Image 1: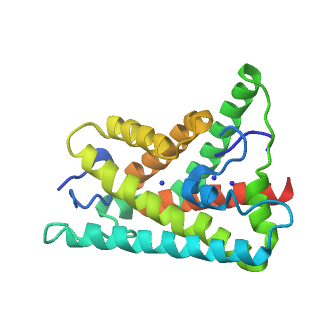
Image 2: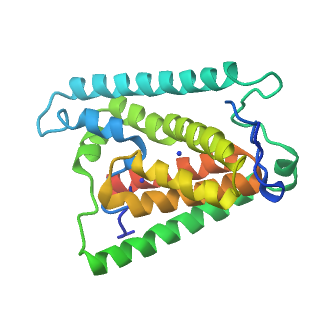
Length: 244
């Protein structure tokens, strides 16, 4: 979430690329699926052969609950710390978003992202050497029970994209773009996005993912496109994990 290696997101942007930026409110080498680092790390001690499926299911539900609470907390914080008239809304856009189709941007952005990750993975294979394309920890979670599988899908494909896009694009990118060019803001937030996943070997791919998501957000003026791209990418990585 291809033989390539994957990891599993009062200011307006510049006039041409201003997003639904509500003024300061204020996931690849190997299939490591870094879109939810804490999720992977929390399961590390549970995902061993013959581990009790009930324990894995319980842990999966716990992580789903915690991630959901983090999302709710982030939305509440952004709303109640915003100045009057600049309340944060994930799916609200501005005039730019009404002129640019976010569904089309999502499709183009997702295809472009897959291509870029594939190409950078090929280069990494040549320079560093190939690595395994399967994540046994994540696969163990997905196969342990229906409960853990559903919880994992919800975290990776819904909760994590909403949370990361709200924080990195909706808040951080918006805030930085109020003081610098939108291109510079995208690069900085992408670097922070990559570093926050604590994965050195996947840092380049994570940086590329952040750039694509940031550009999509800036072009459409709505978080909807970056959320959809993020969700589709994570869904793809989960599918590859199950089939590999």
